[in-house]
Image 1 (cartoon, rainbow, N blue to C red):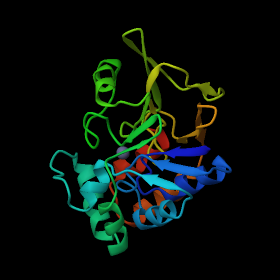
Image 2: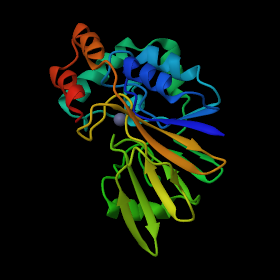
Image 3: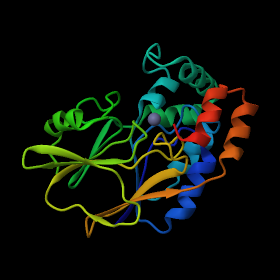
Length: 241
Ligand code: ZN
């Protein structure tokens, strides 16, 4: 089965549509949360994702924040403003959809969460040490996460955890070692590369492929400006931070 793995769309429909066009044929879609927040198209992104084939979609912290399920006082000023805008913009159907999303799902050898297996909505796996602790919180060989918007792979091998940046030209055979894998963010990449990030997973051959695709950032920025979203959030898209 060919699985399209996407995460952190953040209401950026132009990036999402570009990824869907670039990804080609797939049998299933695993979406690791944060459909909304930051971007100008929350309802459109929810509608688009809901219509994807054999979809598994998890809830992210911004999804919960937009529907008032978590306290947003820990969010920075810009994120708070965007969440408040998103909360008002959400349709009743969009709100209901976000409300029903799970925090954790297992598909065969894969555990799926938004943030980390230890704290599925909140914790940022930003280094090998945090990753090492998190290997104790899932039972499957592999765990797929989003949340940091940084594509990366953590490998547990002989009791130590190594990290590996994506090589976009290679098909990676997942093999026997346990891994935590982050496909990066569709709608707000933060690794200094503004191109939309996603991944393809072949569950028959257990091969993973990190991918990037440029999209029309100016188009998204125009809609953000039209809605009066914070200038810093608009500017960061073209820099990839
Ligand atoms: Zn996010």
